Image (cartoon, rainbow, N blue to C red):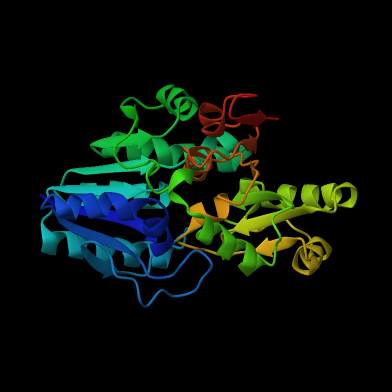
Length: 324
């Protein structure tokens, strides 16, 4: 099969698509990836080697009429050249672009919404997003959501939305297995962070944006640190050029100055940092089915989260973590 995967940023490929692309290529499928080579923080990735063929376009991550039309034209042109058997888009902006493409092309097009937007919004903005979501569902061949609450919510407005239950969004339990992390690796992480192993280590994994609970984690940790000075916080991820972190200027300064907070950045060896962590803190209120929680639990690291869709389907309160 000729399969085209479309995502807004190359970061998305690294976070959750690399392994499925590898599997598809190894099974003999011709995989094409249409995306922007800009990471979510705005930096350009000029060295990525992907499984399949990369088609780089200027992808709009928020609505701009000129960028939207330009990306639409590029996608249609690439699809007509490839003539794919299947097109799969991820996230709302891609889903909407593909619903327009569907009108002008004959290809089978599906999409996955990683957290429905309209159910977290209010007023006029809520109905605009709901209109876009409902329109896309009505046009595309299939639209998947990742958790039960999103499915129940959208099903009341649009017929045909499907609850996705596997095959591509998950956790590699061999990679995220504490038994596969040797003591030398653990020691090297401690040495890199200048830790002696006696500290209590919290970890946050994800974009440094307000709806992931980043500001709440930082401010809560700084308060916690006053009473428990032997605590440390690892933040793994990066800022997003189109979304606010939620931190004020003063709070940002405290975050940057705090010697007990380690800004690890985007890394490929997340499992190694999880191996020295005691608790993951992830109070996100806009999720599909968060991979970072699955990875943490797979490593035996309990998770503190909030009672939000997606998160509350993975974390069982007082069993593998706490829901606050």
